[in-house]
Length: 227
Image (cartoon, rainbow, N blue to C red; front, side, top):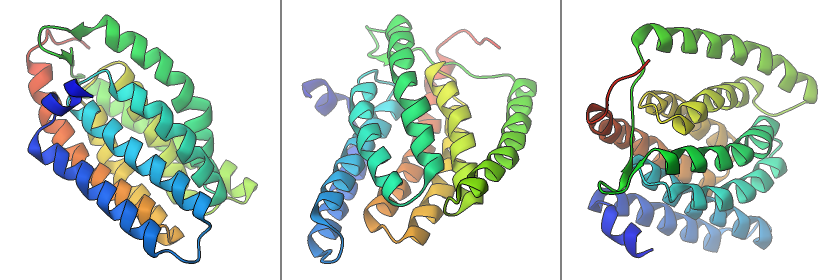
């Protein structure tokens, strides 16, 4: 925690305070939603914002916050029938946390206090985006068969998240371009679902994604470029 206090900028602390403040506010004024749901939703939001802002700073400790966020978010998504989000977090994000933590530790600049980032070549990025687009169409059909809510939005968020997380684990700057798309779609999805806590969380995620891209561009320039 002492390291986190030192490494985050005033902007990042503003993000954390905004999410925490809105989360507590919405939880307190909500008289219709079960208390347990609001508690779990709040845990997901607060741990999630710590995770993403620390990731944008290039710190490996983001994975510890990520574990708590994933568990709480799976429960909230299940309650809202966002099955794509459930499968993404439970079957992909959770196990990939262990892989990501290992790879980030292995490629961590201890003197600089941040992970060694890199960027992709344009042709490789283009192929990645095409493959992601095909995956969105196919996964939408599966979600529709399961009777999920907002199948197109859920599929888009889920498939792009898979690609973005893979780029995050392997330390590519381009993850943030995809996170911007994911966050935009997911804000709409949760707004339609009527959950103000999750909507606020993802809205701040979106703002943080722009910051992450800027900071990781700086980080990647400090490292040898690879495909």
